Length: 161
Image 1 (cartoon, rainbow, N blue to C red):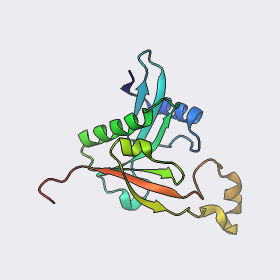
Image 2: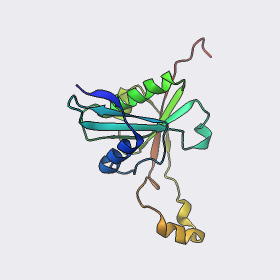
Image 3: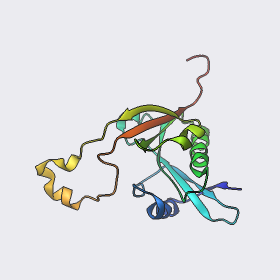
Image 4: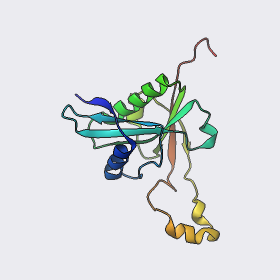
């Protein structure tokens, strides 16, 4: 039986660096959760932090910045559920995350998340000739130029408000 456990940023980043398909570890976070086998083997991590998009950073919204597993069945759903339970306990009323357009979102739906909207690929900040030197130094790992989907889960409103 898999078990949710605490994890340090250093441990989470090491797991993400070793296992994530298309993103590097996050630069910062508010907290993270781990998923472990009974023998203690780490099979997945999720990290949560302030929303990257400023218009979502209202103090009551949390963003799952990374969810990463070794492929263990149902691990992502367990991680998304654990992050939401922890966020609710801390007073957050909304949690968001993004997937790439070609990802199904099955783990998110299984954990109660809802698809909100599709987002077109973003242009690169480094596309202009003025940023040529910066572009040469930029790390190629990331999701620039990829269509994405925004997902959310919200606290139930009481009294219809």
